[in-house]
Image: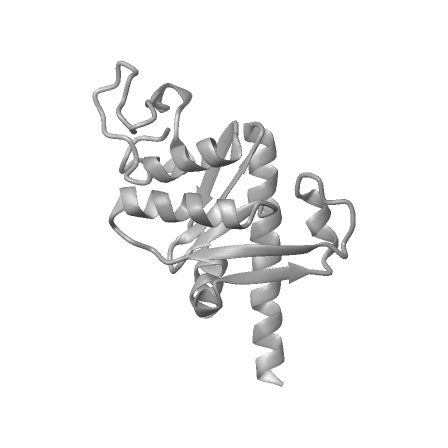
Length: 166
């Protein structure tokens, strides 16, 4: 897990923390893990993920706000969907659930677990007005999923802008 308050783009491997299932640091670091550690733990437990990644891009934040009342975003017809684990065709329909944000991390972790159980095929979810979470069997796969979703969400957002201008 990454430490709280550190620039993730500058994260050094020596700074990565080992935490237990309750988000307590078990490595010899004298720092606090990310406040969202419980969410990562629940994703690992619910999905059996080997790695979980989280981003705060403009596009995923905007679309999570725009579609929050619908409970998710349906993404379909894009060739890039085939970059998601197990997806074989651009005709795939990916439901990306949107979870209402909360500062009560234990309750939010329970909500995330419930959402993932209700949407077994989902490769990620959006935390409303906050960001994207996705995972994979390993860090490389999780990174690929982040890149795929970021591309797709930006494409959808830009398409909406073009449609609304006309």
